[in-house]
Length: 239
Image (spheres, one colour):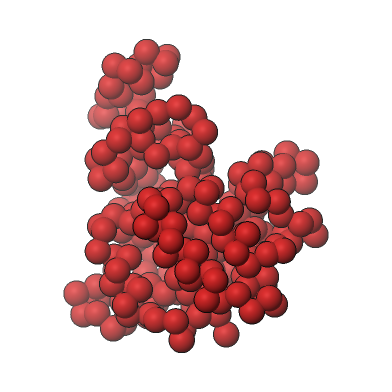
């Protein structure tokens, strides 16, 4: 398993709202301060590839589930979408016309209705892992690319990352033998280090906020993003 500290940073910067790259979970701080979020929670993070044609935001390339208990980080589970589905779900006709006989996690965001898509993803993940989630975060490569440009140059595993993060991640897997989860972790560490080294805290936050507004970072339920922004604030950025 990836170390808890590294994965939570990775998920915050790349896959979660990235709002604070704080070395501890932004969700931890939030949960500790809001009584209605006390108790046990799981956050489902979906990393998407919009290059496949569909009505929705993109194919699910990788997923993570973060467990929290009263604001304290618990287990982080990597979920590889390949082959995961819930047999009770029937894909729509347009998806079946592509030769798909099950509604796989990979295609859970097929339709344009984000909330329906995230519910499907939650159901499929729960069926296959027994992990039920109550917050979902979806992020696209455009948001990651913008973060790289904002804080760069960024290096991961000894290589400079281009502004095409999706191609970089795939190359890291194909040529360097990294798993998808480890490739994402390495890129996240590179963004963190560049942000610290280049003094780009404010630029990172501005970029994340901008791409949330553009729909490249999506949070369900919607109010989670605004609440986290207002609670954490700029002073809690990378130290």
